[in-house]
Length: 104
Image (cartoon, rainbow, N blue to C red; front, side, top):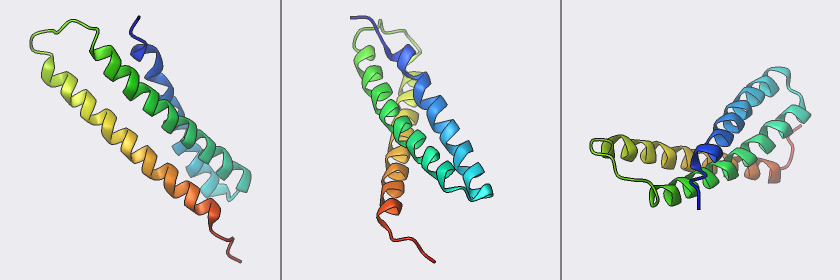
């Protein structure tokens, strides 16, 4: 099977970055529909980040080991896990805000 990680990895980058920009814009304009768009982009970005981590793990099993690149790859993996953890935490927080009653 071909390594899909290089194709998949760009989706969480774009979706999570766009989510942050939309969230800031929604906060500045106080538009409820913009908040929803930001949340949906966050959730899609989180799913895409999980797919990127999984495809990266599977892809690592199929590529040749390059001398000297091991440290770089491990750092890359560490950042991927941190990003996935942060996006999962933010997604959970966004879900908890949906369940909270609106304040007057």
